[in-house]
Length: 250
Image 1: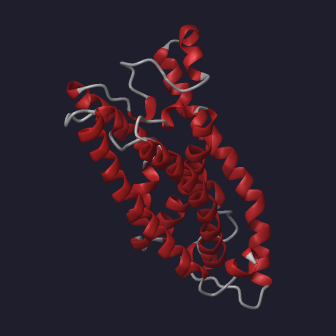
Image 2: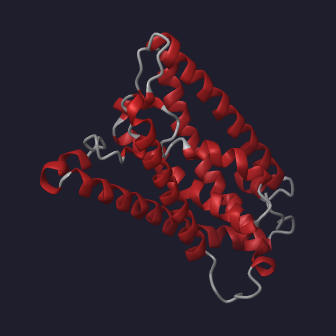
């Protein structure tokens, strides 16, 4: 049933609509979360620790832009980011769920639902990438038809992640004067909090562990990318051989 749904001619449009709805839903739920944290838990004082720019927050911004992006390269970059870095952010949090719990049960539910949604979005983004990449490559990459798009797409997604790290570092520096803030967990003013990496600080130093954390995040996303690289060609072959297959982008 899933296979038939995926190969339906209307599938790309359903994906586009789903991404748009998810982006708006995540935006409004994040506004609600920020209001609850500020007015109910922090007595009308903003807590910069919860500023919405962590790795698991970036997919929200991507989804708000993706349905309106016209460039195939930009769209494939965003889709690659969602199916690797976004998916990793959704999965990795369950290794240590202590950060998902709040005094207000509704906020705890929101945190769990957010990361489960990231996993679903990451998987669906991979199918959307298949349709976008495989079906339109002959039109997009005519200058280099013999070169696989995979390495270039992940390279752009990794560069986008590094750009987000730079933005997070800037936010940490600028907003650090207002309170505790540790976007992307890379603020050198605070000890690395992430599980496993926390224990490496006494051995390697905090700054070294921060760079190690960034590198391992890219590595983890790269492993997911390799997994998709193995799986997607099989689905693409099925899509091309099916009479109702479609090559239209999402």
